[in-house]
Length: 158
Image (tube, rainbow, N blue to C red; front, side, top):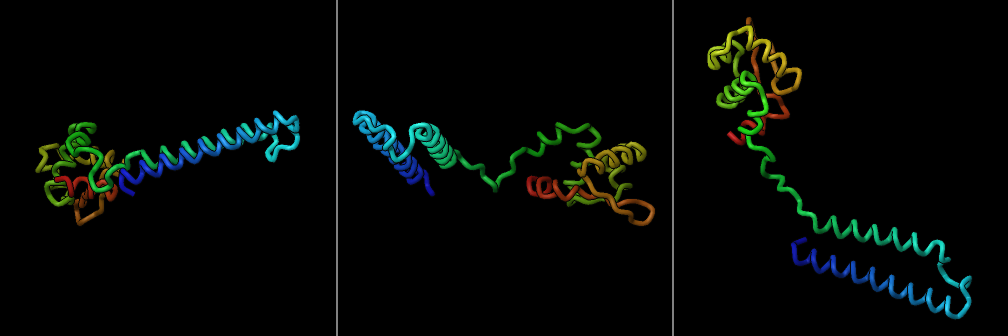
């Protein structure tokens, strides 16, 4: 539904609600004036909560219609902003992986980033625990890949 149709629909829904409240209020007032309060179609103790609930429903519907939807096609966060939230070693590892199609051997990762092998191992273990990366054995080393949940984010925005 485009913007102008949403506005027209929202105004129509609110107008119908206000009209209904007016008619029901007039009916209740006429019943009270005639002295036959018990003859109301809707008993007065139920009238106010019913109209309040209906108003809440209508308000929620209008809010839902007018709230802008986020664009699902664009990433919600900038890659550099995300990397800034990580430690230096973690950011360097993810940058190196993103620049190399998302997958490198652990030994190659250590040589590309300049981080000592032991520190790379510890960094990768922390990242693996947070599912930022995935590791799988390959001979005497490991293949390291960007985690499944982050792969499209890092590889598409590169």
